[in-house]
Amino acid sequence: MATTSTTAGDKTEDTTDETKAASAKKASTARKTAARKSTAKKAATGKTAAKGTAKRAGRKKTEKAEEPVKPVDGEEPVDQLEDDEDDDLEVDDIDDIDEVDEEGVDDPDVDGDDEDSDDESEDDEDEDDDEEDKPEVVEEPKQKGAFVVRDDDDDDEPRRRGKAGNPKRRVITAGATADPVKDYLKQIGRVNLLNAEQEVDLSERIEAGLYAQHLLDTEGDKMDFKRKRELKWAANDGKKAKDHLLEANLRLVVSLAKRYTGRGMLFLDLIQEGNLGLIRAVEKFDWKKGFKFSTYATWWIRQAITRAMADQARTIRVPVHMVEVINKLSRVQRQMLQDLGREPTPDELARELDMPVEKVQEVQKYGREPISLHTPLGEDGDSEFGDLIEDTDAIAPSDAVAFSLLQEQFKSVLETLSPRESGVIKMRYGLEDGQPKTLDDIGRVYGVTRERIRQIESKTMSKLRHPSRSQTLRDFLDQ
Image 1 (tube, one colour):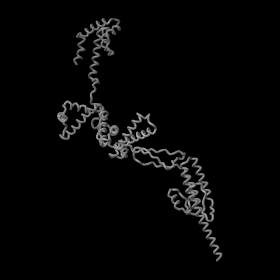
Image 2 (cartoon, rainbow, N blue to C red):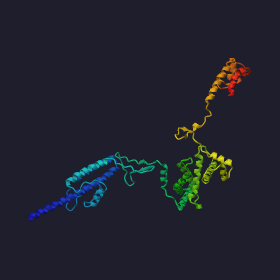
Image 3 (cartoon, rainbow, N blue to C red):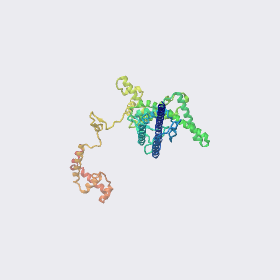
């Protein structure tokens, strides 16, 4: 019985030693896992050299951790790790080990055999080192919009670095820009609309900012630093309030610009011109009168759009006052077309507008839009509108033939004269080069006075009027 008891005691001590050794190895494995995680995070934020040092330190720690642990009676085995965060890990703290698993770190199998655990820990450590060397793959965000600016780094986390140790650049990806109007509406829709109280508050801040800026411009050199700083803050606050009031009413411009589409200007151009009117309305708005800002700004926006259309929409610019008359005539004409079921006559329009008939016809003529000469005609579009317009500068074939015959006949008539007489006539009337010469110029050519040239010209013209010579040329005059 004593021998049996001694044997049972030895087995119990051996079982206790094995249990402690297994627990120590489990704790060592958990610590090594946490250490690898901490080392990986630090290495991701350092340079390449620092990353290599961290890897070598991690291997040394693994070699030390793989040595057998000698438990001490009354104390739990503790490994010496350089990381201070690992000192707080307890062997029995299973919750911390589960948290490590949930964070996505590949832990070795702590429930397996002792030899398998050591081999798997070494393999996992090598795999972690290989994964650290690989650059992280960042998925591009699949978003729609004009441009998406995405930074993968959070402010609270260290900046991710590539393999070369340089921080990753911000990624700018182009979105769907096929419809710029839709993109613009999406941008302005992010600002909330304002109520009456908010409009008054912003208007007061704008007024205070303008007054502060006026004081800085006029008396800024005489103020102390504290006073000047307060005025600068008020001026900047006024500018921010102005921007807020503008951005909150951009949708009002879009709603008004829709009414003027199809009149010669693009929709985005109308919006831009309306925005200029909105800026003017913000500068002129008087909140003390009690009206809403949208009511006041509507008139400035409409004026800016109509003025821009008068200046830019037409190929031939029409004065603004005439554009207003043309628009009024167009409205009355459309209304009468609906009422009568036919196009109204100029007399009916004149009675409706209370203006003379001649004035109505003149306004209608001014309101016509020019037509391009390259406008295609017909179903196939093979011909253009310019092909139907006569070219007045072009010479008709019949006229060209008649002129050629006249030149030949006149040349034959001049051959009946003397060389001096024919030469004087040719130079006097520019029959050769198209440049008529004076009597003095011809006299210098022949070495005689201008009076002598005049006499020769008069005598030659008398010869040409003789029926024997003029009859052949008179036939061309009758045609």
